Image (tube, rainbow, N blue to C red; front, side):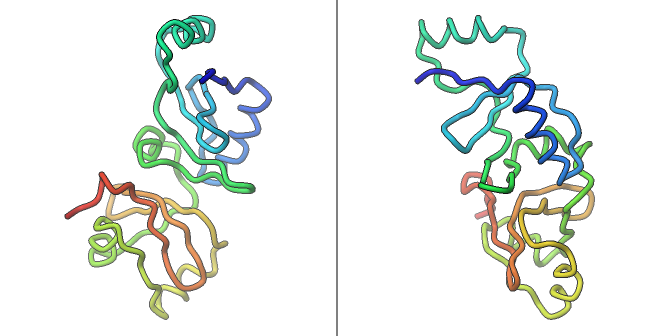
Length: 157
């Protein structure tokens, strides 16, 4: 597999889309992982050095998985939430303790009538989940539920 890097103009477009979450800069060398996933590398190797390493060793992935590209939206990864937490200021849903526990177990959350009044005034789509002072995952807000995107290996048992 050949490493595919994302350069200035395409990176600028992605950052414009990431502004949906309040993110205005990415201090990473971006690479495409498949058609939908974008990874960020912050090490000291250049793109030429990474390409050579890929050819010699067969490195397929470089950096941390940052986000998934859907046709018109970006969904942040679990690790990107931690790495970019200081920039994330928009499209955040704050859960109560019971909801947070269900979310951390990997379950979708059905919206109560109160939740619908509180959250459905916002646009539906991908959101960052917050509990108290912590960002704990990503979800998709629909008309009747919060669809959980917490990775299986990060869930409570």
